[in-house]
Length: 391
Image (cartoon, rainbow, N blue to C red; front, side, top):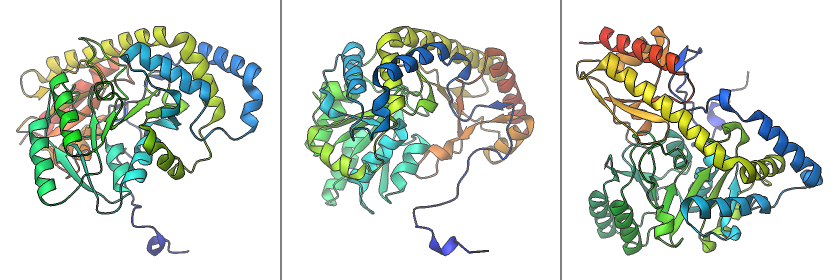
């Protein structure tokens, strides 16, 4: 048998976070609940798209994506976020992961420096690490990235003649902590980015899922679009399998991105269907999914309170899909995951979110894919696993 190991590129590696067999309560990945996929409305949108525009599927799509969908996203962004975005600054992508990879490939050379939050989405780390950067992480709390620490870091990098390629932040319902960056910090971040000539990469794929409080203006809006790349997605609201997201991008960046985006275009049929669906049903869909996921969040918070009580602490997110939990001091985090899996519960351990593999005292729970009773049963089993691994 051929030995492929010496042939692989250095950026490839074998890594899996999911168990080798399915578990009854997998709180690891935030899959949208398939029970609520809008099958009838998608069928309706697909029929209309095919009858009116079906022949367009026979040819390659435009590099920036379907013009009608870009128009829909522009209208949606104006309606929900009060941002006026020309359609020629919107690039359609095959889900947010392609957006992460596209920005990384456009900006990062091996050895370049990028800035992220202390804990961030593992898919972001995988996308960035393909390009072999030096990732500098900034501490965060319930108000998002610590901009005072960011200021110190940027000044230190300047003194060492290091120019960061961009600052990446998940502004709303941050993955994994659930934090929402405050308006004050958004303004501070924008001011620092301008002072240090560093673009901001604003990941806002969870912003639609707000359950309480008022939305905070996007950094892109505060900046008037200058110096900010904004990432959005329909995955959490419509369905992850549709694989439709978008980048809102300053005009000078677009030609560079399109030279990197070597995919012959996003699936035309999906773009047409999503455009039809969003234009007709998005308002009602947002209200529906916010209610569904708010109730799931509340079910998990209630279960954590009942089964873990005051033995530890966890986040109380105002939106999004995750709860960030601190493992009790006397629980062995190195044994907890294997014990939980034996009991049928899976979660994402904290170090998977850290550029430096830190955070073993934390774990993330996703509540989107289970009903209330299953959430409760799974949390009970997790609490039992914690009791079993106490030292």
